[in-house]
Image (tube, rainbow, N blue to C red):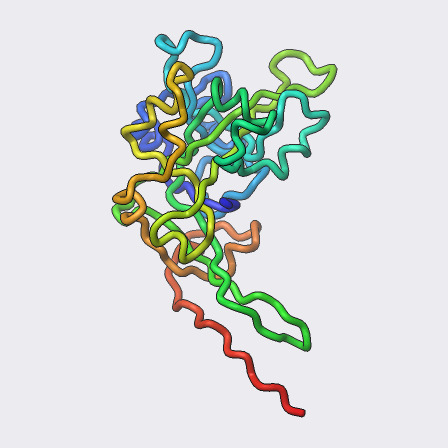
Length: 262
């Protein structure tokens, strides 16, 4: 799964990297985080509003410009009764995209890219006993390109409008596609975001292109270029959001179970 990530790029760099333009209807560059201050983000969690790359909607694909649009993380299907449905739909498993109604049409018509400087994952090292209770021991990792470049997660987006609301009062939301982890990523977690190389960005955004060839494992060289950096447990608290979250720390060791004295 992917439940936390970071995005530290300035808006100008973001637009340039993705050859995209601001969506002035959504506040332009100052509205990338839905009205919150535009600044580096080190602990992005589901339900937050974040910058997402998509083709300009309601325009023929061949004429549509790439736009960076603020979207709520957690896809809310158009048929949902309320916004809270999206709280648990922040990831979409690649294996079930064609089977789930919430994702099936979006896979064909509404694909997007989620820019990220890196993402967090937790590796379970074992269990320990604290005050007579068993609990897992986890090491947090920050997974980020070794060269400092940006990642682009494959995603889907949707437009939802509550019953009785007028046009323009809806919510644009997205989900990050996850796939089985490959290469060294499997040592940390069994799943990972579907990271797309820059050579596939245009095809992924274009609804005229069959997405199937892009749903396979990412290239080996892309995965090999991802740094696996152990970081502190503070990222587990969404209230924390500062550069210290991505600072490397000493890696935890696997817990050793102490013998019970009878």
